[in-house]
Image (tube, rainbow, N blue to C red; front, side, top):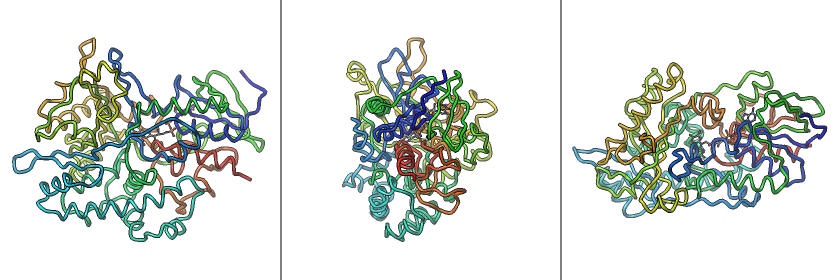
Length: 515
Ligand SMILES: Cc1cc2nc3c(=O)[nH]c(=O)nc-3n(C[C@H](O)[C@H](O)[C@H](O)COP(=O)(O)OP(=O)(O)OC[C@H]3O[C@@H](n4cnc5c(N)ncnc54)[C@H](O)[C@@H]3O)c2cc1C
């Protein structure tokens, strides 16, 4: 099909950012067509029923929301809620032959203070924890509104934020060094550090870890990671509804294979032979994919570095520490994530092996939001568990993708089982064919299934949210490319990455405000 119609904009990619960009443009009166390769919308924000005999819709890839600004939810009029978890995290440990655990509530309380005391033998580390996160909370509140405005230079943003000391430790000094200075306990240090390593294959001493850390702590002005009510799929369902309501034409099964541009605008072709023309193109897939389609060299980026494991349980497992499982799994449950274990795992993976003490974190969605299960499964005590394993870069899976995936899954299970009274296999639901209700996704799977280059969950390495002098061309919103008609609208745009809609919003603003 070749249509005579010239659209104002073509949006390529129906992940959440593409939908956000398309809807902002359509709301402003632009004619918009959105082209998505897959047969469904959502990209990395999707819910599926992986074990068909069980009515349980799991967030297959992304699972928690922090970075989505309330402003985008309000502007687009979507009916989507996120729920607070009462527990921030639980980290089991063995000390003096006994099992214990560091339990941290969402808001500092006597139980948290006691838990720090039990681990560290005093109140000093807990005090330092509060000071550190209180300082970051002020930064989060001040910096969040800038994510939806034109970019500033580092110097201007630093001066407007007015927190020179916090700025220094968040943006300029390796976060590993800062953590080692501010905390004494290896486990406490590690709990802090994990936010700097999610999906990011780097050492704590590299500023790339700071970028990851920053995005994990400033979301929506609070940095709180919240549970998407109804799962990630509920977010996409709402985005789809408002996109259609505002007149966006959505074409699924439309894999874009060619992009041309001239001074008049852009033309794209799809694998099925359709052609579309428009004034502007907003590309909401990865920058590496865009570069390939334009015949340019792709920007360098680290390999994606995580295992995602989804599980359906017939009941929650008991813990060796004796803590109530409903508390332990309600927040982020850390395993093998002391500071020294994280650094060691990085070194092991760098040398080409899957770390046997795999650092991982998990949480149970259904403890906060049971609506992703049928009432019957809920009543029977079923739960879901999401596991995110660190320091498993794509390179470890190249030679033998399935064998390496099985090895990484086995490492994750044995790491977790160290702390469980009921081994995880004994509480997994059993499928009709006798298999256990567990699915694993390696970085290679993410590349194959979603087009995430080398499984990078942020499309490419995160940048600081300001102009830092590394740009090849002038940028205003962080979406601009070297072509005046082509914009980046996905996670790989500056300030993109994660479930935020920020890249989609900013690309739409770049188009709507250009001269
Ligand atoms: C396992 C995993 C866990 C994660 N956990 C979290 C989390 O808990 N919280 C969080 O905030 N973030 C998380 N993330 C990151 C987050 O999900 C992504 O950064 C974000 O969803 C990217 O959104 P996007 O819309 O920019 O791109 P994507 O979701 O990648 O969507 C891009 C879309 O473009 C389409 N596309 C690509 N190329 C073409 C083409 N040539 N033609 C047509 N269509 C094309 C793709 O099919 C896809 O649908 C996670 C990611 C993964 C993979």
